[in-house]
Amino acid sequence: MPTAIRVGHIDLSFHDASALEVERILHDHGLPVERSAASHEEMFRRLGAGAIDILVSAWLPASHGAYLAPFENAVRKVAILYEPFCIWGVPDYVPESAVASVEDLMRPPALDRMERLIQGINPGAGISRFSQAIMVEYGLTAAGYHFQTGTEEECFGRYSSAVAQERWVVVPLWHPQWLHHRHRIRALVEPKGLLGGRDAATLIIRKDAEAKVGTAALAELSSLYLGNARVSALDDALRNPGNV
Image (cartoon, rainbow, N blue to C red):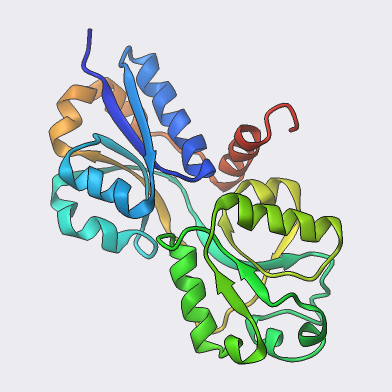
């Protein structure tokens, strides 16, 4: 019996969805898989410590580059699975003529209608760090806005509830993500470039695990490409089974 390949993913549903695609290839090559999930910081700690063999995936360079840097020489970048990027978004029923950019949040009609709570996810996520910088650099706190970290359910549930009631709300989000498969979310222009740009979602393997995975499986993994739209759809199917 081959040794199990330890596949780790950050504990967010779209990372889970893309990890399942990687694990399918490993299974096809007769390799057993031991899967695990953890927060951003913890999953990179496990990768650096050799507690996992494969990470699905590191968003490089902006979102996760600092987490990977201390042990980058111990790993190999196998494939780019998709090209994620972060946004501050609003529902498409919020007129672009009224709110086109982050700067517009500081003047009417946004000041009259936009909810002040900007609900995020966990504090280790790139979008959370970027959002905290936006709050400071644009002086949004002075206008009563408040960025708050939390769970996926708090972030996505609040947005879905707001859309159902056609409330004006800002969501700190990214592509790919299942809400984009359900709703039209318009990205606000962010002139100061604080959202990190477009990353490469990179499949990472420890060099000391390559022999365990084998050349055939590594070759197939190296050609794996999912793309943003497919990951959003896979995420939606995983989060909302039977309702796709």
